[in-house]
Image 1 (tube, rainbow, N blue to C red):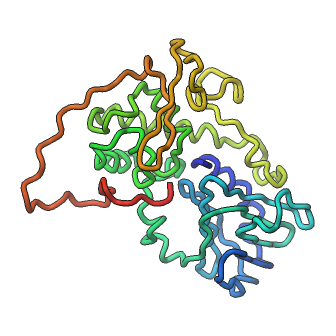
Image 2: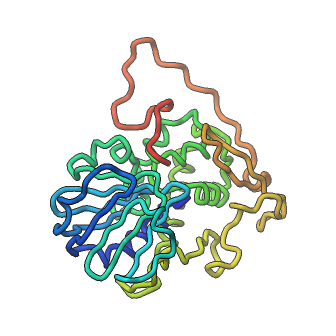
Length: 309
């Protein structure tokens, strides 16, 4: 599944071609929503928010896509042959000189910009790890609201921080030597804050531009990237420490990397049992007296449904 860094690179690729351009056509082939009113309007901005892509139009409409496992955005020059079948397109946006096509996205919809803050999928997202104004204290507060949830599940909850998926979860927990299966309450604020900071650092390191701003790299150039989460190694050479390496020797200690599934969605978690020893959790705190009011704030309740991961 694309993670926050992938969406950031998609936005960086689409933005120079779309922003400020007049819409020639917008089609949502699998939706009954008509888009005629947007023809002739201008694209205001293209924005990644966690694992979501938002395209804002100047009359107040937003095109929201979430790629999940199967979706992809391509950017073609006008007249360029598509790499995928038109029958799999879920959004087609044409502007002078370019056509941006979203293929196989399970979430493609239009909403008003004024509704984004309160939207059921977007409004509850936690601080975006790649945002300029990332609020680390708020991220920690939201993580603490899931104190009884295993850390490897909690850090994937997009209501805590937006942008982390399976790869970064496994890698940053390994780098910080944290047990993914221990509950959040097993860790100090200092440990959790350091983990969040590393997550932001890893994502930022993987979105650094290597081309001149606005350079066209082809329809899928924004996907030509190898995530590198290990320090001291060239990009692309042994790029990750544990993710996808079940049964192979840990680079740091030689023990066999293991994989276990976590959470209701059974997401894969890769870890080194020697570098990330089992962490004993302290006893659960006494339950609040009957009738006590919950703490104020917008932290995610432990049993509530998260937005699209």
